[in-house]
Image 1: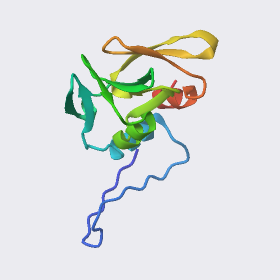
Image 2: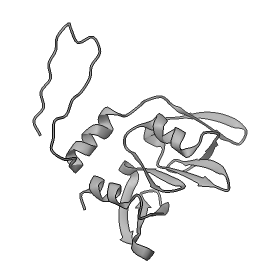
Image 3: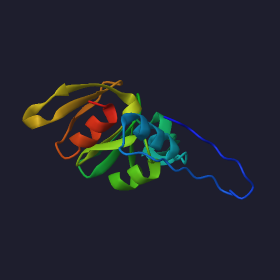
Image 4: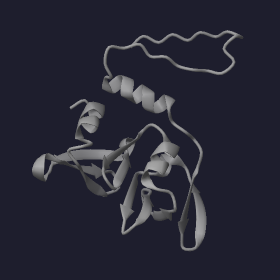
Length: 144
Protein backbone atom coordinates (compact mmCIF):
# COMPACT_ATOMS: atom_id res chain seq x y z
CA UNK A 1 0.00 0.00 0.00
CA UNK A 2 1.31 3.41 -0.92
CA UNK A 3 1.03 6.10 1.76
CA UNK A 4 1.26 9.83 1.17
CA UNK A 5 1.02 12.59 3.79
CA UNK A 6 0.55 16.21 2.82
CA UNK A 7 1.10 18.94 5.40
CA UNK A 8 -0.21 22.40 4.69
CA UNK A 9 -1.68 25.32 6.67
CA UNK A 10 -4.84 25.07 4.56
CA UNK A 11 -5.64 21.65 6.09
CA UNK A 12 -6.90 22.75 9.49
CA UNK A 13 -8.27 19.36 10.48
CA UNK A 14 -6.78 16.08 9.31
CA UNK A 15 -8.74 13.77 7.03
CA UNK A 16 -7.86 10.61 5.16
CA UNK A 17 -8.84 9.43 1.69
CA UNK A 18 -8.09 5.90 0.51
CA UNK A 19 -8.27 5.10 -3.20
CA UNK A 20 -8.78 1.41 -3.94
CA UNK A 21 -10.67 -0.97 -6.18
CA UNK A 22 -11.66 -3.27 -3.26
CA UNK A 23 -11.46 -3.56 0.51
CA UNK A 24 -8.58 -5.87 1.37
CA UNK A 25 -7.74 -7.05 4.91
CA UNK A 26 -4.84 -4.56 4.93
CA UNK A 27 -7.16 -1.67 4.06
CA UNK A 28 -9.77 -2.84 6.59
CA UNK A 29 -7.13 -2.81 9.35
CA UNK A 30 -6.08 0.71 8.32
CA UNK A 31 -9.72 1.83 8.44
CA UNK A 32 -10.15 0.29 11.87
CA UNK A 33 -7.14 2.20 13.17
CA UNK A 34 -8.22 5.48 11.58
CA UNK A 35 -11.78 5.19 12.90
CA UNK A 36 -10.80 4.23 16.45
CA UNK A 37 -12.29 6.39 19.17
CA UNK A 38 -10.57 6.85 22.52
CA UNK A 39 -13.42 7.96 24.80
CA UNK A 40 -13.85 5.62 27.78
CA UNK A 41 -16.97 3.49 28.15
CA UNK A 42 -18.88 3.87 31.44
CA UNK A 43 -19.85 0.48 32.88
CA UNK A 44 -21.06 -0.78 36.25
CA UNK A 45 -20.05 -3.59 38.57
CA UNK A 46 -20.90 -4.03 42.22
CA UNK A 47 -22.67 -0.69 42.52
CA UNK A 48 -19.68 1.26 41.19
CA UNK A 49 -19.24 2.90 37.81
CA UNK A 50 -15.96 2.25 36.01
CA UNK A 51 -14.55 3.96 32.93
CA UNK A 52 -13.29 1.23 30.62
CA UNK A 53 -10.67 1.90 27.99
CA UNK A 54 -11.55 0.52 24.56
CA UNK A 55 -8.30 -1.47 24.49
CA UNK A 56 -9.48 -3.46 27.54
CA UNK A 57 -12.84 -4.53 26.06
CA UNK A 58 -12.78 -7.92 24.38
CA UNK A 59 -16.47 -8.81 24.02
CA UNK A 60 -19.89 -7.19 24.34
CA UNK A 61 -22.86 -9.49 24.71
CA UNK A 62 -26.57 -8.98 25.38
CA UNK A 63 -27.70 -11.54 27.97
CA UNK A 64 -31.19 -11.62 29.51
CA UNK A 65 -31.89 -8.07 28.35
CA UNK A 66 -28.68 -6.65 29.87
CA UNK A 67 -25.65 -5.51 27.91
CA UNK A 68 -22.52 -7.09 29.38
CA UNK A 69 -19.00 -5.89 28.67
CA UNK A 70 -16.25 -8.49 29.05
CA UNK A 71 -12.65 -7.54 29.68
CA UNK A 72 -9.86 -10.05 30.00
CA UNK A 73 -10.82 -11.02 33.56
CA UNK A 74 -13.98 -9.12 34.52
CA UNK A 75 -17.61 -8.60 33.51
CA UNK A 76 -19.41 -5.25 33.64
CA UNK A 77 -22.91 -4.11 32.73
CA UNK A 78 -23.92 -0.99 30.87
CA UNK A 79 -27.15 0.76 30.04
CA UNK A 80 -26.13 1.30 26.44
CA UNK A 81 -27.41 -0.91 23.66
CA UNK A 82 -25.08 -3.02 21.54
CA UNK A 83 -25.34 -0.76 18.48
CA UNK A 84 -24.63 2.31 20.64
CA UNK A 85 -21.46 0.72 22.01
CA UNK A 86 -20.30 -0.29 18.54
CA UNK A 87 -20.80 3.28 17.34
CA UNK A 88 -19.01 4.64 20.42
CA UNK A 89 -16.04 2.27 20.10
CA UNK A 90 -15.48 2.65 16.35
CA UNK A 91 -13.19 0.40 14.31
CA UNK A 92 -11.66 -2.81 15.56
CA UNK A 93 -14.97 -4.11 16.90
CA UNK A 94 -17.25 -6.30 14.84
CA UNK A 95 -20.72 -7.66 15.45
CA UNK A 96 -20.67 -11.44 15.00
CA UNK A 97 -24.31 -12.28 15.73
CA UNK A 98 -27.53 -10.58 16.80
CA UNK A 99 -26.44 -10.21 20.42
CA UNK A 100 -22.63 -10.20 20.41
CA UNK A 101 -19.73 -8.05 19.21
CA UNK A 102 -16.02 -8.65 19.70
CA UNK A 103 -12.75 -6.78 19.60
CA UNK A 104 -10.94 -8.56 16.80
CA UNK A 105 -7.51 -8.06 18.37
CA UNK A 106 -8.63 -10.47 21.16
CA UNK A 107 -9.67 -13.19 18.68
CA UNK A 108 -7.61 -16.36 18.95
CA UNK A 109 -9.12 -18.94 16.60
CA UNK A 110 -12.16 -19.96 14.59
CA UNK A 111 -13.73 -23.42 14.31
CA UNK A 112 -16.43 -24.75 12.05
CA UNK A 113 -19.83 -24.65 13.75
CA UNK A 114 -23.27 -25.95 12.98
CA UNK A 115 -25.35 -24.77 10.02
CA UNK A 116 -22.49 -23.02 8.23
CA UNK A 117 -21.54 -20.80 11.16
CA UNK A 118 -18.14 -20.42 12.81
CA UNK A 119 -17.23 -20.55 16.49
CA UNK A 120 -14.97 -17.60 17.33
CA UNK A 121 -12.73 -18.22 20.34
CA UNK A 122 -11.17 -15.35 22.23
CA UNK A 123 -7.80 -15.21 24.01
CA UNK A 124 -9.47 -14.98 27.43
CA UNK A 125 -11.47 -18.21 26.92
CA UNK A 126 -14.78 -16.65 25.83
CA UNK A 127 -16.39 -17.85 22.62
CA UNK A 128 -19.51 -17.26 20.55
CA UNK A 129 -20.89 -18.28 17.19
CA UNK A 130 -20.60 -16.09 14.12
CA UNK A 131 -23.96 -16.18 12.37
CA UNK A 132 -24.21 -16.52 8.60
CA UNK A 133 -25.33 -12.88 8.31
CA UNK A 134 -22.04 -11.57 9.77
CA UNK A 135 -19.77 -14.31 8.41
CA UNK A 136 -18.80 -12.56 5.13
CA UNK A 137 -17.55 -9.48 7.02
CA UNK A 138 -15.45 -11.61 9.38
CA UNK A 139 -14.03 -13.70 6.53
CA UNK A 140 -13.15 -10.50 4.66
CA UNK A 141 -11.48 -9.02 7.74
CA UNK A 142 -9.47 -12.17 8.43
CA UNK A 143 -8.64 -12.73 4.78
CA UNK A 144 -10.08 -16.28 4.72
